[in-house]
Image (cartoon, rainbow, N blue to C red; front, top):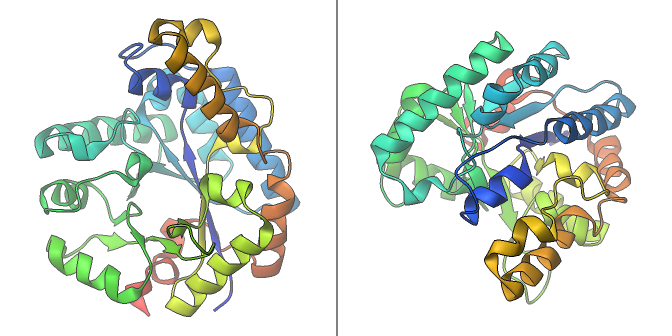
Length: 290
């Protein structure tokens, strides 16, 4: 099996962390930094021959920066949905999830002037214990990429348990790659923090399991300037201990390993080849289609 998919969870980390920490409900995005992140991603893709990929975008970006969403779409990339706010959906009622998905899809389609057919839950957090939230996803989208799985059998069992009939499942592979650690996802911080051989093991595991390798990343991982970090002043309402914790935690996401990410990702892409937009390659990205 050849090729790999790259998808981007396109979100404003600073806005979303402030919301997670209850420092605000919402506020202005760091729009200049989002543009900077997209340009870094586009520079990487141009070096891979101008590959086009899928961007899972939050709806709040479409509300506050519709020109950015329009620009990403105009460059030939797929605009998919990453909910409206970057909230953990499994803490919400199904009706609230349905409303949030409808709001986000409407905003994204208006900004992109394209149909939005794909969805990924923020942090992959959607209720997987019952079908109600997945039914809301199935009503609005053609495919979902919110599942982490290690085998085709696991994907098939989950699809049956959720009672899905039309929704395609495009999972991110999760496998054992570092002795003594829990299974890791193929992408995100794991890709930049661990040595290249760990990514190689995850890719090999995905292929052996019958998955086309699918790497997910974020715009802040393509930058090493800390452009999306919250400052001491922004974290001050949390108190000194939590302030220090989040200052330290952010460094892991925004600085450690970021400078080397393009080379590490580029090696994978040059070896495997990039498979393009998910919406154009549903059979290749869906392990149940084989």
